[in-house]
Image (tube, rainbow, N blue to C red; front, side, top):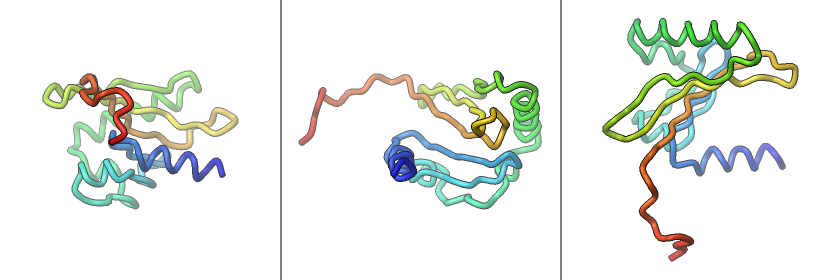
Length: 119
């Protein structure tokens, strides 16, 4: 049941979510991410989708994640046009071992929808 709940959270999030294993292989993209990147990149290496400079930055962040279980989130990019910040977030198992990471988008625009608008 809990896996269905987590999947539902991911599937319904408006922000793109891209989850990678510890080798940077994309294992999951939510519908918002597939729409944003215009295709499902599951099974591909995330670094193959970036230029050399960005790939090196990804490697640096992963190295930092591996240094300590306390190292879990890094601010990686600000997109002023979309008014959002992008982060890389470590994923860890129950022992604190690094098992992968995901890209987190935080939009700073205020919601314009009326409260509890269910029409």
